[in-house]
Length: 199
Image 1: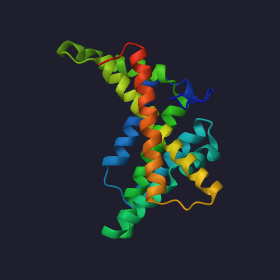
Image 2: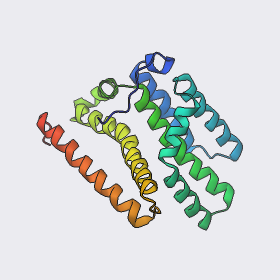
Image 3: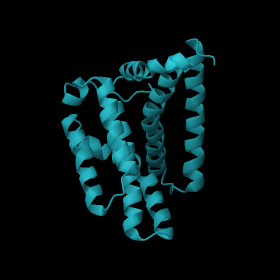
């Protein structure tokens, strides 16, 4: 399973995939590009939290996604603090977390097939200049859905370390994560080839 879709009847579940992708895409751009302060970033946090509540995921669903990436967030925050003052480090780290949460929210409320169809329809006009809308749509849809899957691998590795009493470190965390990711990529590639997508 490469999709984290969870069936539901929330407004976000019922919203057409194209409109939803556009809405969350605009939110991600605003989070990534807009020159935020701690106050404006707080508003962005509130919007993302509201999105999870509207989608019926609740605070527990939001916290579940945050726990999956806590090591990445801590690493990013510490790395930023080495080079920039703490307000800038906080803003950058929070931006990364919010973008990840937005990607997860799309996966949780949108079936991959609907996402693929919406992207392909949006790119169809570009087919006149030789753009393969179907391939680009597949690439974008896979990117959106695979991010939470890889984060799930990270969570499983951390859980396994805790169960064995192993302290997570760069070698004991990064190497298994790369192995899981490469194995998943191989399996995904084989599945795509089996469906006739060879190039």
